[in-house]
Image 1 (spheres, rainbow, N blue to C red):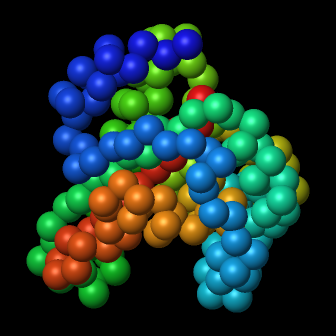
Image 2: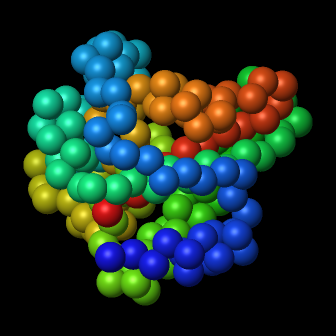
Image 3: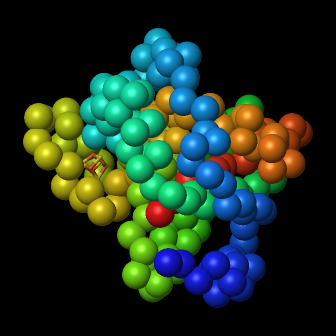
Length: 178
Ligand code: SF4
C-alpha cells in the first residue's frame, strides 16, 4: 500500500506541472488511437515499446486495468517555436527523467509501477525488435500512452487538464500504474 501523503510531498519537490491519482477503469481504450499508430506513426512496428509488439489494445487494456491505481503526471515546457520538431522533441528527455524520478519514489515504497510514457523507446540506438531479439532493457523501456490505445483527453478533462496548452507550450504526460 502506497503512502500517498509521503509520495505527494516528494512530488511537490519535482518540476511537475500537474499530477492526479486516477482509476485505471476510468481510462478510455480506443481502436481509433491504435489505427492512428498504424497509419500515421513512423515508429509503428519499429520498437518493443510500440504496436504491434505491445499487444492488441484489448490485452493492453487488461494489463492496465489489472492495477488498482494509476498516477498521472504532466510536465510543460515553453519553447521558442513549437512547430520546430527538433526543439519540441528536445524537451522529451527531461520529461522521461522526471518520470523515472517518480518511478524511483514509488520503488522506495516497494511499489514497481507499470509505466507508459511518451513517444517510442529511445534507450538503445537501434531497437532489438528490428533484429528479432528480446528487449535489452525491459526495466527501462516505457511504451507510450498511445501505444496502448489510450485516449487521454477525457481523463485529462475530468482532472481540469488540457492535452495541449497552445502557443509554444509543449506538454507531456506519463501514467504509472500500481
Ligand atoms: S530498451 Fe532498447 S531494445 Fe528495449 S524497447 Fe527500448 S530501444 Fe528497444
